[in-house]
Length: 77
Image (cartoon, rainbow, N blue to C red; front, side, top):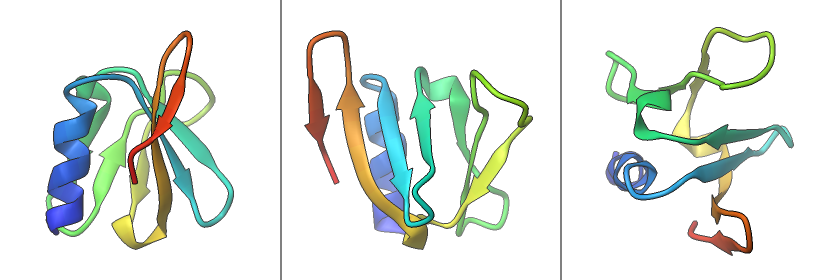
């Protein structure tokens, strides 16, 4: 649960990209695009592009969190 809270805090500071164990990557451009699931164990991402309305993710499947920007990519997790 602590890692989920840390992820949500980071998303409030800058755009992030989350990589999953499946190989999928999701960009979080703004804190409004990620929320804690009501069950308290998962989080919900609302993609800014694509065909999905929302994606529910178990934090156990997050392999990497990167801060993304115009000039750099920094791995945070």
